[in-house]
Image 1 (cartoon, rainbow, N blue to C red):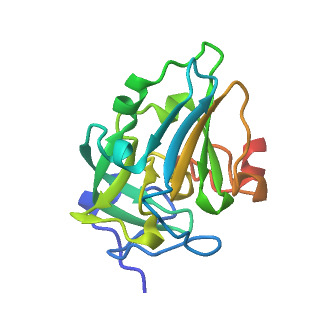
Image 2 (cartoon, helix red, strand yellow; image 1 turned 135 degrees about the vertical axis):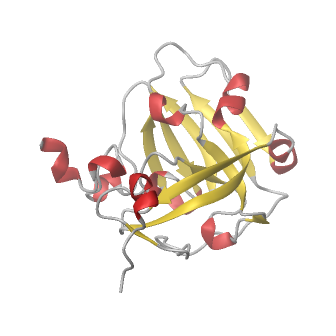
Image 3 (cartoon, rainbow, N blue to C red; image 1 turned 30 degrees about the vertical axis):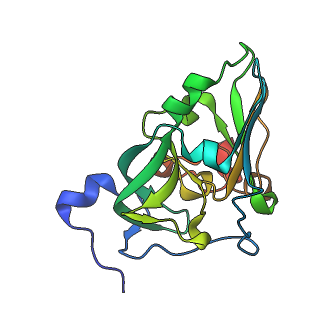
Amino acid sequence: MKKPIPPELQKRVPPGQFLTEKFPVLSYGPTPKFDSATWDFRIFGEVEQELRFNYEQFRALPQSSETADFHCVTTWSQLDNHWEGIKIADLMKLVRLKPEARYVIVHCDGEYTTNLPLRDFSSDDVMLAHRRNGRDLEPGHGFPVRLVVPQLYGWKSAKWVRALEFTRADRRGFWEVRGYHNHADPWAEQRYSFQEEE
């Protein structure tokens, strides 16, 4: 039975969600295997110069922390997750975007992708995380790195991220072409693509 949300927390929980202390593993397909010797991270597309980092270089980038709530489209929410990793704002100091860049396609191991407009991707609380609540991410939760986009449903917080592709035009990702909403705002309950016509 789902417990009622305490009044002091109701403003932090989007409509249609319930609170949980668990952090379920939800993935399509098997968990990819990680090898630090072969792993790399790319930035390409509408950029002045493509970038590539090996694992050691990537982990040497400036580190930050962020406490944020997490809302899954399957209707659970978990509050006050403490993430550690690389803030997108810091990463983007190394990237020179072309004026045409409007969107980012996030490429992940397991052939997963998701898409974001730059305005969402560039929010101050968005980061590439490798730790949660004081521990390295478990493989099922995206180790060695996952994107964290607190203001959108959890499928936009892609796991096992390997590349960022900046594009002129939007291009739907893995779940977006399978019927999930293209934007995914939990406060507007943007769960499914048929809602985009409303």
